[in-house]
Amino acid sequence: DAGVTQSPTHLIKTRGQQVTLRCSPKSGHDTVSWYQQALGQGPQFIFQYYEEEERQRGNFPDRFSGHQFPNYSSELNVNALLLGDSALYLCASSRRTDTQYFGPGTRLTVL
Amino acid sequence: GENVEQHPSTLSVQEGDSAVIKCTYSDSASNYFPWYKQELGKGPQLIIDIRSNVGEKKDQRIAVTLNKTAKHFSLHITETQPEDSAVYFCAAVQGGSEKLVFGKGTKLTVNP
Image (tube, rainbow over all chains, first blue to last red; front, side, top):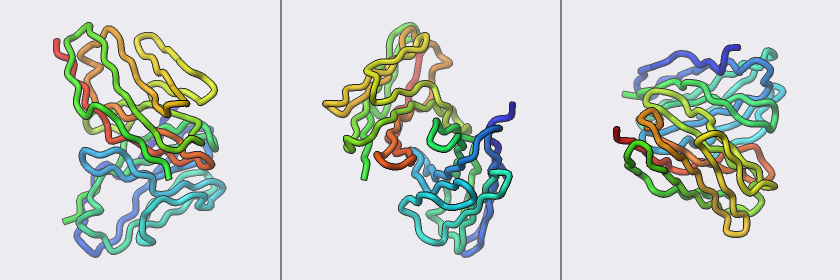
């Protein structure tokens, strides 16, 4: 049984560009949450998707948006990248309100 | 909103010793408290969790205790091994949501 998968593993972008990160949830899971983890910090909640809708949102600007597809996979989009957006982006999947399991993350570097 | 404080930020122990990491939370409505282990270059891995209707939970060498009155919970690792070396995060689920709020992490080093 595959766990949570994320792509790409690493990404380098320049300021002002846009990026799309992808996540496939663990089999049987219908909810996807996205977190940003800066170096040396704990993950910070960005938003959560369930039934293809954003259900909850953390304290992140509108430059951060997402989508969930009918097969429960999800994308995180970040527009107008800033240097401060450099971080590890983590996807976690769950069965609705149950335990969240994390993927390996996508390391985004903004130059 | 919920705020989670975690101590210590670094912890170094000898192989075979015990390690204890402590967390406090602010939202009395929080009802779920997972612990994650994160190795270098990897995503957080769930190692144990506890819900607010339970005071203690144990899984082999790992145990978690919860004191709802004091709003703190702790991770206990016994008979530590070098492979336990990693960064450990506590988290709390904010009351009324499914949002995980994390502590800042504890870097555990187990010296052979």
